[in-house]
Every structure is written in structure tokens, then in C-alpha cells.
Image 1 (cartoon, rainbow over the protein chains, first blue to last red):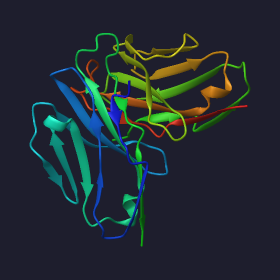
Image 2: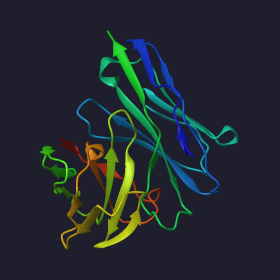
Image 3: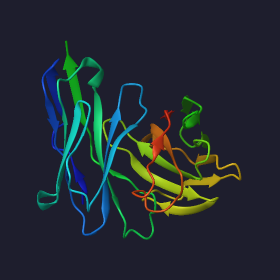
Image 4: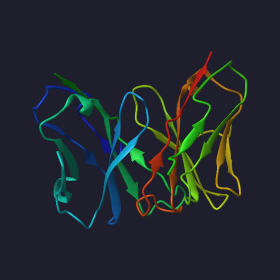
Length: 118
Length: 116
């Protein structure tokens, strides 16, 4: 079963528009971690944020903000005033703590392609 | 400080051949994880190694194997290559092993493997 669902395959926006990426996850663990990674055309995954399941406080970092809602199992990501350099594939990932045979396993969603045009 | 490095950048192999991919973690990091990313999909976990021991394994056949060396670098080996093994292979390093949520994983640029 898919643990992390990113329903949006591609989002296209014009520069300076806001864009929100949805992430819905599924786990039976009470302690887990959620991540967002950015993958530009170069291919390297760039770490953006980690959130543990006990910290539901929203976070803002520059033009990036994250909304974690445990009640709906969602961890959404918003880019404010988008720029062309934000064009990339963005992945949401889940790490569960009760997995005894797969330490270190990040479970990724399928990713959302963000295209920002000037 | 240098990030995670991987070699080679690109590789073309024929079905049935064997391939070895290499990864050097960030200095001070003792754990290496390997992921396979097929075009258009998210990365899939293959292995985690910590202190030279396999600590985690994903749902991949025995044709996939890996090892970690005393300097914490790692190699991923794939035997009897299939067309479906064509993918970007990503290596990630973290300070320590164990549940990945405790220690952030930093990824290298990947090795693009094409099997013909």
C-alpha cells in the first residue's frame, strides 16, 4: 500500500504566484518523521525539512512554509512568491520508527513537478 | 566540506552483466543508504549500512548487494542486470544509522545506469 501520496503530478505557475504541494501519508506508528526533498534537473535530492510526529507547529523558512496536520495525516508545503529557480520535482517522504527490518528507510511519494515560468 | 560523492556519473551496461557503483559519504558520517529511482517515480530504498553492517534492506532481489568499508565508503553491486534495472541510483549519508528520522539523510548526485 502506498504510504505517501502526492496526488498532484505537475503544477505550473507564473513567477510570483504561490504554489501549495499536497502530501498525505499513512502509518500506524505513533512516532514517525516526515520530510520534504527538492530534486532539480541535476538529479540531486536536496533536503528541505524534517518534522517529527509530535511537533505539529507549522514552520516557515524564507519563502517556504509547511503545514502539518496530524488529524488529516497531511504535511503540505507552500512556496510563496515562486521563482524560476523553484522549478523542480518535490518529494514528500515518511520514516517510520517501528520498522525493525529496514532501518534508514525513507518512503517517498511519487513527487510533484513544479514548473515556474517567467 | 564536500558532500556525498558518487561514481561513476553515468554507466551503460548490457543485460546479464554486473555493475559496481561507489559512494563516499560526508566526512564524519558513518551510515550510507542506497536508493533506486526509476524515471518518473520516487526513490525506492535498497539498503542501509552502518558501521560496516547491513542494518536495513528494501524489497529488492538478491542480485543486489552492497558493502561498507572501514572508511565508511560503500559499494552497491548488481548482478545479472535486467532492462528494468535502468535507473538513477542514489546514495545518502547520515551521521549514524538506525531509524532515518533520527538522522537526516543527505543525498549524492546519483549514478545513472542504463541497461541495454
